[in-house]
Image 1 (cartoon, rainbow, N blue to C red):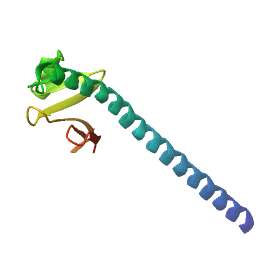
Image 2 (image 1 turned 90 degrees about the vertical axis):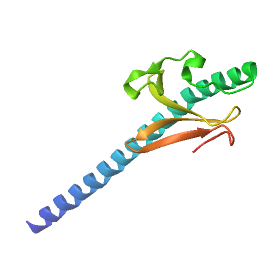
Image 3 (image 1 turned 90 degrees about the horizontal axis):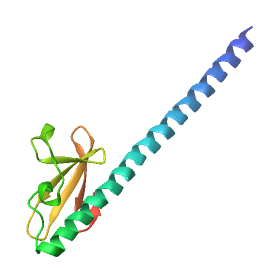
Length: 118
């Protein structure tokens, strides 16, 4: 009788372990999938900014200069582009940052001076 209880406990622990493993795998892939997707969409905005800069000799003042409508939910300082909210900070005539939220208080930034996402 005690052997059956031990077998059930071992089976339960194995199922629990694999359940956590599967949930971790899903969380990791879904999270990275969103980031990669948002970076891909962000790259399209970066191309628009760089084209604007090449034509006008300076970075745009806001997303409006790129023909992107401001998102009024965020006071007009963000734009929703292909389902993702992006923010734009004009640093100078040559440099800018764009970013999108990962979670509350956390964002992923693209810096034009380094040309990298951080």
